[in-house]
Amino acid sequence: MTPATSDRPYVPTDAEVAAITQAIDRDELIKLTLDLCGIPSPVGHEAAAGQFLYDWLKREGFVPRKVGMVPDRFNVVGSYGGRGAASGSGRNLLFTAHLDTESPMYDASDRYAFKPESVDSRIWLEAWLEGDKFCGRAVGNDRGPMVCFLLAAKALKRAGIELNGKLYLTGCPGEIGPEPAEEYEGVPYLGKEIGANYLLTHGGVAPDYVIVAEGTDYGVNWTGCGYAYYRITLTGEGVFTPLLEHPEQLIDHPNPIMRMAPALEVLQSWARTYDQRYRYEGAGGTAIPKVQIAAVRAGNPTNMGAGSEVCSMYVEVVLTPGQTIAAVDRDLKAAFASGGIKDIEIEPYVVRHGFAADSEQIEPLRQALSQAHELVRGGPMPIAGPVFSSMWRDHNIFNMNRIPAAVMGPTRWEPTIDDLLVCTRMYALAALAVCGRA
Picture (tube, rainbow, N blue to C red):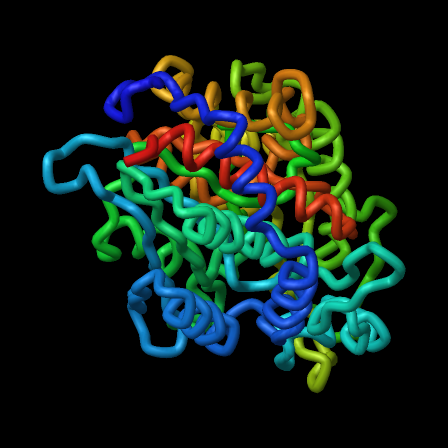
């Protein structure tokens, strides 16, 4: 038996593997997934889902706490095990998943970003089964994997397997976002600051390792991207419409809305090569950063007699662990300068860098996950595809604070019942491998 204090994973016996498998109830998994994922939890409105998680943890004896910057957007922290905590032995593992669902904001801003039929789609607010597949955005992103680690902990407890290290079970608001911008300010528009970051700094947790439970199609990655949100503003001259003369070239037009067209050509040319110039190859995953314009603002539709003097576009620039904002900022500004775009202001209003765990420090967690994969699915666990390393996930919060964190989870979109059952077994075995048996 591998000592619980070792950085090498604990190797479960055949009897322990069988007991864990037997302790996972298929019907319970289906019900919990539909119940938890069926709670409407759009960005900024996580309280009901958080309360459900808190109540479930309390009912199951996992001693939950609410940890929130504000009362209606709180993290939930439960725990299991920790028999070796008094002596300082055992390794602690933290599972986390986010409570918010990728969705419309369900406020006045939606009319400018979504078609009405998209806002009305049930996919954002509901969860249901079609055959053996779970449908609804919350299942894949991200409360389906949350169900898996909740039932993994319950399976360990039901099987009578006490852990030497402590297992933390957490749910966070704000992983998806949003970000404050323009008149959209204040706590309703905060994301990472009130979620995993607040959990780590104020949640009373002391993890050696972290598993962020998100869909990765059963791969693992410990590379994560950040992003910069840019406001790129053109200014010009308001000309009374009867006096307006149209130049041959848009770049010479006094109205900055018209000059936005050649500016977009410059942006697109820069974006077309950005992802390959800054491609990041790491042991924990390949990151391919992308650039996308997401919004445009200009003028006043109630008073159009002189056009507009200001036009802004809002652009997301993904940042790999190998990039810094200053270098990207210079590169972007140089592109517009070489494109002959004048009277332009380029400013990042959100900056979040990407991070990657140290490959040596995360090796014990990688081994534990690979061992679980071998026992449940056969073969070593692969590194997840580049798409899963090319986005923000909350492992960035822990890796930036030198706590080795990886992302691993089931099929990303429309997982089956068996997908979640398999992932639940893997999470339970990984937890046992990291924490050791008391």
